[in-house]
Length: 375
Image (tube, rainbow, N blue to C red):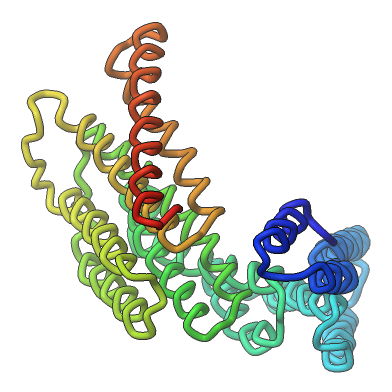
């Protein structure tokens, strides 16, 4: 499928003399023939999901009448058929990715089936952890993001539920612990995918790192605003520090980031780790009088979002750049609204800030153009 963006880029390249008309037509023809995979895979995955839910519904309607042996036999037969189909499918076809995704779902259902038949009990994270270990070899065959998204979701859910259990149940401590450690873990696996040149793995964990990082940022913002302390988080501080060091070591080992990116990532991790330490140790440094907590939360979120915006822009990550930009704008608007207490004063402050920002950007572009480095 030819996207308008690709068509515009090819036209610009041809106008600049980078490619000729024949090359542009060849690229368009190749993309037309091979560029439909993402839509096909998405629809096939949706069809597989609907088929699986339908089969589960049919079985559930007559569940009590089916003997346990027949249940297990049918389940293992289905797994065998799916495994054989995966091995026989074309490595570069969308059918194989759909079969892998369906095999993952059936395997997870099989764990629940065995637990029900033999009356096994345990924490949900144990089943998800077992499923993640079993599914890793199968997921390694996948070349698209859907199976890797499913596997990464199961793995992070297992870790999150385990951390929630060790933190003593659902609380602000467990939520902050989950967000901090899981965001760092997802970022570590994202960088590992980049280092191994495994794009589906990098994409799946990259999305999770972004989502968990944003949730952690605004969660800390609220905690700072309320002035809470989280003493039960103290034993996990060394684990968070070790994960941060592992992320930085992996990013620096193969130069996965552009010059300056490692410094920004270091500042980001130090900033988050430092504030988490403050919340865990309850140091509560005095910040500008009685409004210190609200101001600290606002400064933290703007700092993190600003660093994320800078890192995304430096690396050329368009999607994360837009996400950080939107949330940064919303947080700034929230600060103005809280500070001025009315829409009129807030609007005036935002107009002035917007004009200043536009002027700064235009000035930067003129400076870059003067030195031959237009961004």
